[in-house]
Image 1 (tube, rainbow, N blue to C red):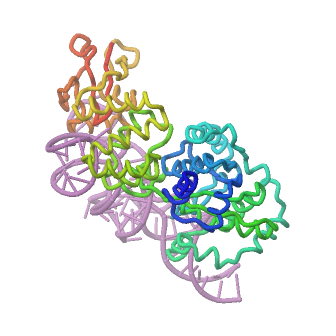
Image 2: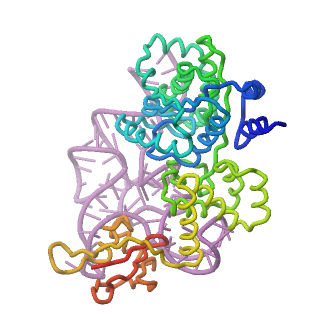
Image 3: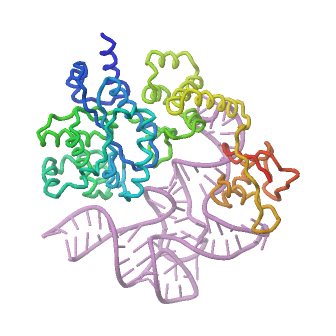
Length: 399
RNA sequence: GGGUAGGUGGUGGAGUGGUCUAUCACAUCUGACUGUAAAUCAGACGACUUCGGUCUUCGGGGGUUCGAAUCCCUCCCUACCCA
């Protein structure tokens, strides 16, 4: 097997859920065709997480094979809302939010893809202009049965939840994107299956050869459930190095292999070695290092690793914690209360919350727990001490 | 258009005149144990507080009542059935 063929094989299998039509696609790649590979992403949240990055990495694989990448930002579809990965109706986002999110998307994606040769398109360019007649034509290609047999639509129907007609139109829009950009291949998460197929259907209707489809696996989040922005279990590619490192370290051990496969491009033989030879913690350190280095560079990754080992494995206090000044209560010369301080610096949601944390022994000064009652800031005694709230919030207090 | 059942805290889902800041589960937070893992255990989980309390919450608005998540009116929203 030639090196190129091996690479193609890996591209079509690593982290891949399904490919249609596999043989067809492989043949074209082997033939060295410069395929147009489409990937669309809706700017529904301000950050891209590792789950989405699985597809982006896959896109990079194709890029490395010499394919042409068409990156579609769903500025239009983003306002409509895809329900593929949702168990409930997704609200329509206002254009402003979408716009705001959109601005950061290409920057984020550029951490993985080489954007020099990428064709970036915004789908409002064509979707905002379709007329009813054209939409009807597209709608004719689908039957109601196609839609209601989709698993999560069916689930909602069965449980008496609302399904709006608008949502059903979503696949048409994504499919139409394929027609417009004349894609040869489209990549998406496996939850995108239906939408991807819609592209094939509409392309055929438009007299084009239907695109091949490659779906990537969905990965699980830090809590072992599906990674989803709405569950707060994501690792975002814009996360700070230390934060990102920590999040990876907090993954359940059972997800190690999956993350190596989906979120890195370390050769599989080496991954197997790691998993066999190391204890899970060490393998996880490698994983964290690799992931951070992918998004922030090798140096940052090394720093984050050192930081992690120092601060968490050895239980030391971080050395680059923020210095925060204790303020006064109103315009008096009395120092503010500890509760107010904790709330003001964002370590607790409310004074009640702060009080609770203190009562539960979650607040300490230089390692000494603060008693629930009677704490008063004292410049002499407290200046420069390290305040710790909960597990991970530190601040050096100054006056 | 008609009928029926509903809308409760981040989520699911109890509660049908006072004992309701509202059972319970999940999520979350704190502590213990650890590898910031998993599992487990303990506790917390509206806001403010001089820690005695005070104020706000059960789709929106209005009303009845000493007292309403609970009753009435009205508006908005959802599902199911019929047309």
